[in-house]
Amino acid sequence: MSPEHIELKTYLERIQHLTEQGKIDWKRANPSTFTWTRRDGASRAKLTLQKVDRTVRTRTQAGQIVSKTFRHYIFQVTEGQTAAQMLTVNTSEDESFGEIMGRLFETIQTVISRKGLDFLKNLLPE
Amino acid sequence: MTPESQIMLDAISGLRALVEMPFWQRLDFWIGSLFSAAGVVFSVLAFHEARRAKTAATEAGRTVKIQTITIELTEVAQRFDRLSMDIRFSEARDLLNEASRRIRRVVSPFQNDGSLQETIGNLKGALDEAKKSLNDVRPATPGDESQTPHAVYYAVEADFATINGYLADLLGLFEKKTINFGEDDEP
Image 1 (tube, rainbow over the protein chains, first blue to last red):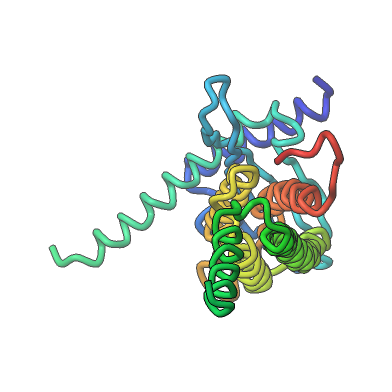
Image 2: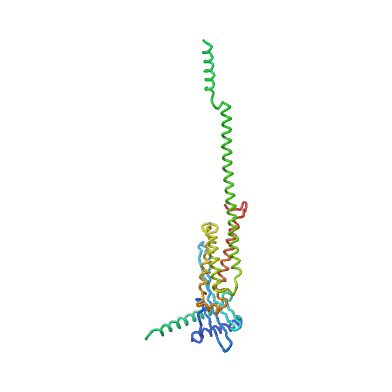
């Protein structure tokens, strides 16, 4: 594993930790994609995490056709001003990030669901 | 015996000789039979020729139809080939809906054809999977689409490639139906 790999994994774990602490405010852009936009003065940057399921129909040795679903994640870092892609990790090309990205996706989903439930709870009269 | 009686007896004798002679020993019977047999033979030949002409016309019509289908499926495949990374949700939805409609219309008459059944089933399954993948990136609000660069491309790219693979298989099978492989040809 290259030093860049190890460094990136560290950052992803840190993002997951900060998400759990509620310090990163992820938004759901669509059912399978979360984004976080970081505004720091005039500059902006955006993180995107997308889950992609791919189903493939294959024939078994017994002659039956079965569907098998493969899941992978795409993590992108975009520079806000130019919308340039600074970093892209696709776990269909590099499976070593699959586990950490899966955990991060689950964490984001849980935090967003929690936030929604808290919002609903606060709406209700005491 | 009077001369009249003699003439009458001669006429009866001639008639008797004629009646007593078997019909198959008569020339006119064989001439009539020959013409009748020739008529039957020519009728059978004409029937077979008409049937072969009908089969050839049907085959020609089928070949033209299959070529039209091949052209239509190739057009659809080429549209999937030119998938842009910047494709938006609405564009991908329109592309998939149009392709799905065209493919299903073209393949539906062949879905019970033994040699095409499996590929058609796989193709329909891939279209359904692409629809599901596309629904997974339906923007929460219209403005959110610009917030997720290439999300639609990443969601549908693999599914569209799978559809194109099955389309290529189907094109090959359709083309095979228009080609005579001689002794190796399947019935």
